[in-house]
Image 1 (cartoon, helix red, strand yellow):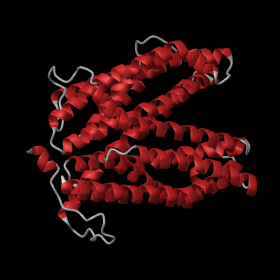
Image 2: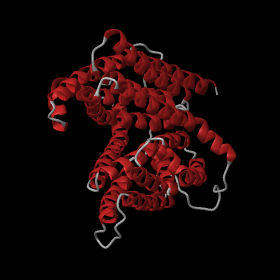
Image 3: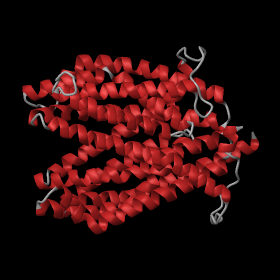
Image 4: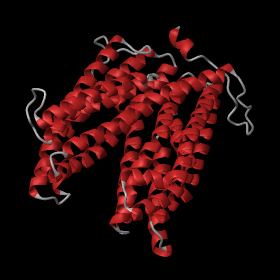
Length: 473
């Protein structure tokens, strides 16, 4: 009864209607707006905390000198690639749990939770082996000095050797978000981050009664804090959350069928993140040809952009979970309304940030550097970035909503092609027209309206098809 009250059956605008009714003061829409916002803001906060934690860790490691920061930075660059894949794989668990919860099939949702944890451990085994035996080779790719490579290798071995806690944390968090609970993962992340700051400080510098491990102390601090997060997560799931619990002996034996179902949704999402990451790496190479000052401006602008993405990512994840629940409950009109509401929220937040970037680009750049050339380059780049923000808001949320229907293949194709087209077009515009950093980002402004429109239209078609299937089943 509690879950039925939390997810009431509602009527919504027909997605085939070109002129849906305005929201007005419909209490149903107001409740949906609260659900979307309440699920999105913890995700935004959690991602912000993770970003902030990375900054704090970097500042502490930097106290050890340039060799330490370079070695740890190289290892973290590899881990970013792995984390993006693992994070996206958790989408499979999140979508299937959301659909099970929406259908009130809590026994199935609980079994999915157990299988997600089991397969987290299984997935970790080859990563652990690869990390222990291939760390030195992976770090050697960067071509750094021996002393720097030694630091990076040791850091990567510890991080990869303890990757099981990371996979458990990511997939377990995906289960809770699928059930509609993003607040618990946020609180767990906040707790782990606070502990990580203390442990990292103590283990790097040998303070607070801890051994002095140098740069690798950052890796051990991260592992121990994540282990604490996993312990809390398992307690929460054991006690039960939104009808899901991992209590009981049944459902723990690895199921290849369930793994296939999870990976069928998760692998395209993981591949999407990896290909996009490589695309932005190529973009950095393109920008590097413009010179050191342009590269510095690009890095600052990109850091600001990563913060501006947080609302879009948060509302996109909320759309994935809530649309998945609506599909599971066969309330397709509600799913359509949820996607629209999440898109509106993302447009408001990212559009506002776009206005700030457009008007105050120089001031933002001045926070990071006092070089007038870098400030001018970055401010010029902020203008096309600001104009692209609304389209990216639509892209994030509509892609997330489409994943909620179980379709991760289409966002993979559209988003990957969109990023790579933008990168290649930016390189072409530089060659044909010249210009600086702003020219590169103009390419994204030209491509983003197309990709966002494609995702919007595909989701409307998907939700209409689901509605027809439900009507005749």
